[in-house]
Image (cartoon, rainbow, N blue to C red; front, side, top):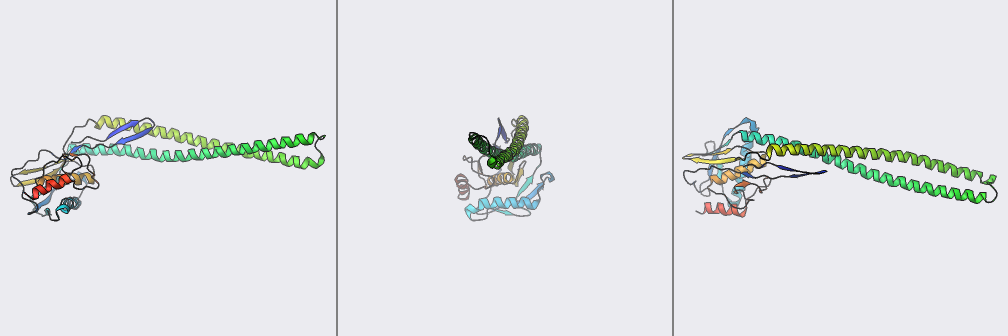
Length: 310
């Protein structure tokens, strides 16, 4: 069963909570117990692969070899062997369930892509905001210096005026100080324009960031409306009817999930039932397993040992 990605909207920000709750497979049937795989490896072959999965037979065999290693590394012996006429046929069957998964994945990718845009604009916004803050400090420092120069100039003028006016000997000094004040005024004016330019850029990025967040929130709302209540369905199943054994993969979103469901169904092919630990390969739901670094839990190992020691 699939419980699709749930996206949560937060004002001014985005939180994405990934919740996968997918039954690995139901409706497994068995006419008789499988042979002990520890003494007699199970053989498998590649059956039909729907071309819409865009995966080759060699790529599928490579994934299955990774699955073999997960189970065999614990026992130190071959549990599965590929044979052109192997007993268990593995099929990738494209269904409406896979179509729904692909539509959901595309929608999810749009949300994540928008999130990447948001992160990029946010980083630029923070950089510009820091620059604007630094420019404001520099402007304030320039103003403070200017005010000090003006105060000193006024004090100087007042002191020489008390002596009866500005003597010719002081005229050049007065003019020099006046030029310094005008130069500072010009620098401050230029700095104010720079600061204002940065302020406008910060505001534009703020508006762009808010617009992107609004767009993403709209996508999340649409996503939840379309997929949050989607019908639950099976990812795959193992079926044994008489001498016929097959593993059907009905849906997967990526290589990690394909490997997880294959590992689960190969476990059923060995005769292993579901276990309680939600992190186990043989748990009934794909929920808390690390699908990108898949490994056996103690519960999986115990279940395998019970099969091999019976």
